[in-house]
Amino acid sequence: MTMAQFDTQAVSGGFTDPVFEAQAAFRALMDASARPGTIHDLPAGLAPPAPLGAGSGAVMLALCDPDTPVWLAEALRGEAVSAWIAFQCGAPIVGDGASAAFAFAAANDMPALSALSAGTQEYPDRATTLVVEVEAFEGGEEIMIEGPGILGRSRIAPMGLPHSFLNERAGNRALFPRGVDVVLVCGSRVMALPRSTVLSRKSEQEAN
Amino acid sequence: MSASTGMSQDLASYNFAYLDEQTKRMIRRAILKAIAIPGYQVPFASREMPMPYGWGTGGVQVTASIIGPDDTLKVIDQGADDTTNAVSIRAFFQKVANVAVTTRTRDASIIQTRHRIPEEKLTEGQVLVYQVPIPEPLRFLEPRETETRKMHALEEYGLMHVKLYEDIARHGHIATTYAYPVLVAGRYVMDPSPTPKFDNPKMDMSEALQLFGAGREKRIYAIPPHTKVVSLDFEDHPFEIQHFDEPCALCAAEGVYLDEVILDDRGGRMFVCSDTDHCEERRAAGHRGRLSAEEAYTGREDAIRETAR
Image (cartoon, rainbow over all chains, first blue to last red; front, side, top):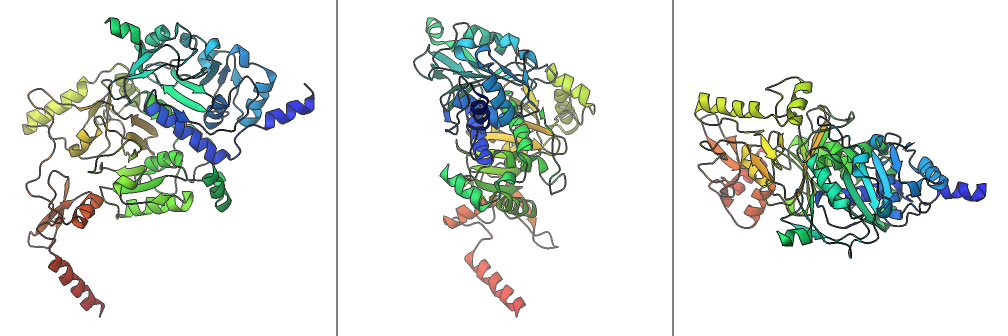
């Protein structure tokens, strides 16, 4: 990669209308968090350097800045992504997940939830938000969710999450009010699974 | 994003809705954490606003951080759309965000409120933003923040029950009528801001997202939709809301929260809906109360004309 290409890549592919697109991205995230399991549209048209996806990029530019340490999964730790983050939002990149406010990963490259910060009992808000790129929002293992924001019970089936995810989430839920909040993105769409949401395998529920 | 592109040409967008972008991001992060931990008070770096503390700086900062060009804003103060606080905050957002405003509850996407929840049932797309003076329900029982924080951390809420019990011991019933403490999603005891306890049942399993902003105390908290909100009580002294002996004098509504209005210096008084939009809609639909006779209106208009002459 020549120096000239590198430079334009870092300075392009962000929000074209930062104030309104950041607001739209936040509202999608807010509605997604308020109603876990529902799918919302993030502003389209972002083009962060691969392998960082457009949806993850939108979440990052809407919420991350020099105040929020960001942790990146192994596959994202390229120079191109680092330069893009440095130019677009100025968030410091940290190697230790437990000190990160936001963590970004693909579903097949997810960190253990226990490797991230769950906050403290006094300040449970000081926890990491994990943004995960999934292959699709449908077609994966069926998961039943319940908790605040969900009327009764609802069903999701995101594709590509590791098999250990549900067990990790159960451990995460047991820490409540501490815990990691999870945001799933696919393309330019987003779904949130805040720590308050209880996940269970559909097959297990039927067995009960 | 064609609407917003047009918007940014008309208006300097870098300070859309007054706050700078870094402040908005900080508040937005606090709001997302507040939603993830229902009832927990998230500290945030509250800014100085062009209005004094106590005028709703917390609510204004929350609204400014969530509002977009497509939103329709309603602002109420004690249920009324036409009091000083409501009018000036509505004018503020018209000026700094150029958004549509309304007084009709069902047309609003964001409702900023001081101390009331609209009588009309809120729906899924709506956000209710509360202006909160003192967010800590335990503050008058324990003045130290370090201690109240520990009490929340340990879910140690015995003191609040003692306070309600002392009410019963002294008055024979729970005498708390506003800022009545609630338990959110079975975990955090929360102050619903000084809304009358009449409104507490409306918070339970609401379809709208409820956000609370306390500017001076620098706290944001939230109740997601479809979340259990229980008013604290005892088995032998169950939670009860206020009841009114007479209906609204203007629209004859029953089962709504009423304000007392003094009419003269000889003990004359009337009770009218605190929610002005609800009252106006009922009158427009033909409901008439004891003091709303059409003749009374005509008579008053004549009197005003007399005075004008």
